[in-house]
Image (tube, rainbow, N blue to C red; front, side, top):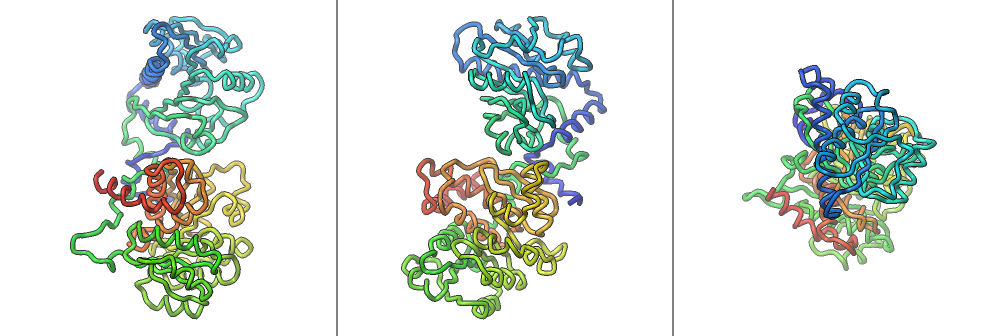
Length: 514
């Protein structure tokens, strides 16, 4: 978990916890940039965002702006922004949680910079405000908001004025995205230097609205000291690992993905995964079918090949051929001993395995069998197992981790990945992909239309295709999740799982042209 990460992972789309962001500030200040200079730059960025929102409001004149200022740096940013907006001719009042004379450090300097009206927080009337700028509490909030402040947040959310949050909406944890007591619902959030996990982890992600990360003079090389471990899932992180077709290549260069089918009345999920694997770049795909489902599967398959697999003996014969290199087990398969036997044989044969749905649930009561490191590769050989649970499946496989309220979704996925020696794809609107070495990414693309039957099976097939082509497990999972989300965006409303894989060619065109 603590080994140093490759430099390229620290350059792209880094996410910083509040503590890591504080470290970035301190490093910058030690290098000779004053904290107040950073605060003035941050206040300028907030004012710019506010002016854009005012233009969208279209009042055609003076806008009534309420800046809510707390005792910390966010409050200082609010004072700076308030002064700039006042100078722009707008009606600005700063409502403070603490009296300005009680502030200290850079926040006190910012309060002195502001020349407008200051009133206590309890005089704030959201119903009489065109735009609210929230600088009450910081991203490092660690205890629930209660009392008068909680009541004020609830009242503001009910009144629903336009709201711009500084860093994160007050009440949202920057580390976990959790709502601590209550939190403002922002239309837009402006943060600085790098985003935080709380911007993309639910429910904080929804409370942030659109997120705008602005630069304020912190140099990117501070990340070399901080060595962050969390990132936003974007193609720059894995694009160079994609095995795109070569001019002189052929299908055998692109791996052979294998999907296990369930019984006759439960074959659809496996076919969704198999067809997705073919669309996602695997050179060949074979569906392994029990005898009672052969005719059902044969009537639906064309380019995907079909082969009988009745038990461990048949699978053992198949595994003799090393060209079968990436497997999907679980969609529509059913639970029981056969799942566990198949998973064990695939992993012992040194093949990559995506375990999903029933494949995960089958190990709920015997999870130690799956986590037995003797059946996993030793360090340096690379991880072969990818688990793709939704929250319920995760809780069945990792009950103690799932029940640990102090852990963020990011932390849960990381701990599970380390325990299982597997890549974990913890699904949801804020899917987290975590590796046993501590790397983790949060996915931010996709659409609510993905919340429909079968889309998870398609995801398993896309990941398996990348594994079949030799992509490392973590990068394969991250790429698969991103491509899955992008395909859904390209289709739009009314998406069904059958139509999802058909959008993958457009996704690859975008990746090749970028």
